[in-house]
Length: 264
View 1 (cartoon, rainbow, N blue to C red):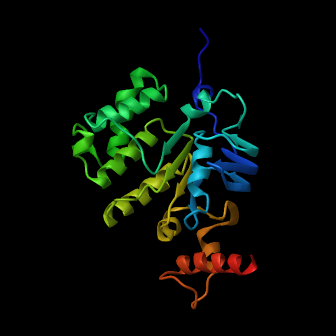
View 2: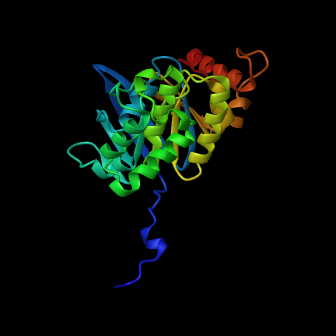
View 3: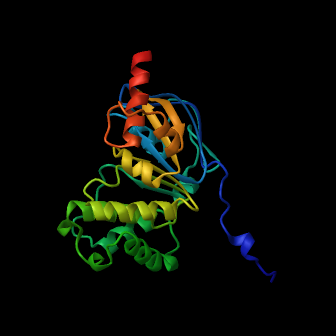
């Protein structure tokens, strides 16, 4: 039998895990994402924008929950749309929606293992992967607690654990820090930096400071369109002392929105 080298068995990382051209996505009858062009490499990308900007609809499209209404979307090298078989893409995805369902009587370990099964992870590898994911989100002492007994912040961390259990190449987190206390948010920032070293991570949030502290790239959306993309330093440079906000990043954020609205 021919020897198999490590380079032959290691997963191939796509140079552009996300590539969208003129992407349009509906939320009901409303066109929530309207002509979006976006290309993302590995790293941590923070998605900012006011309510109704289209952030959640974009995350739902990237997670393959909803199909695009127009344009082109390629995820991990596969074209999304039509009757494409997305199972291979979904095995490499991790997704935490704003609201996620679970069986209340499941333990945290049961819940994460069940999600690993849905992602078609190898059975032999699942127990170690489940324990590692639980450890990474700081729930080791609650691994055998029932989901219905967890606090809001703990539930959110369990949701993050299921999203990362398969070491996804594309990780989508919609408002992941809701319910986390300040110390847990700091720990989460460290986890993001670690995950972004080998994966493409998108974090949708209203917390500008989390994006400025943990993300390599900032994406600002408004009314379904891309308003800005750059580094946190680029975002900060857009603001001035007189702009609204308590930090340089918040002032840059508010300045960009103000300029867009005045031009519109």
